[in-house]
Image (cartoon, rainbow, N blue to C red):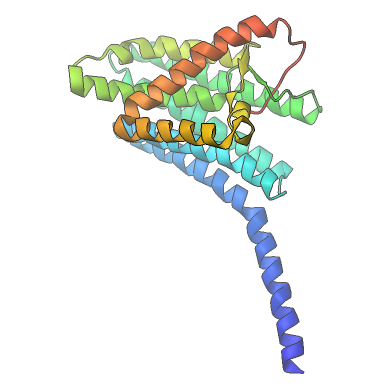
Length: 261
């Protein structure tokens, strides 16, 4: 009799625990994003610029994973969506702005603060615009981002700081840091613009063939292992240039197209 009572109760408790874990896991990943952003700000404040950049890159991976994880586990929620937006603002709006200010110390402080504030405001506007469109059930295209996503904007600044550290050690020049404030300002403009950026992630997957996908990822991993600084810079720079050009040309034929940040 004890076994009959104990085992069904145990199974019920286990199932409830699994369901709780499924609900909490995407939120835990989002919290990891926020932790990376806060840690990046601390590192930048202590002039550990390369570490701050890598933390933002790590947050990019977490940001790409949390939404898909929530959809896969069927545990999407309004709370999760709001947390994701706040995490993105901290990690890809505030942290990159501070990182840029600390990297470009040769410029006037007022100028750097102005560019940093502009970038952060553009990131906040980009996130708010997306949330409004999503709440109003606006048409969401899977093929284009409307404006440059905050994740890619913050990630671009992070990888440029990492690249600057690499070039500074190898060649003794600070050329990337000289250009960084102007690039940051341009990224801010792209975020609030309506320029459609091609969503390349929808073209990467099993639809293109398993062997082709394995080849792509193998080449990417090898490139990253050999020269991580150049791999990040090459990948993001090629994406921004190609997608901007493609988006401007194809955007004329796109009446309305929105996608996730």
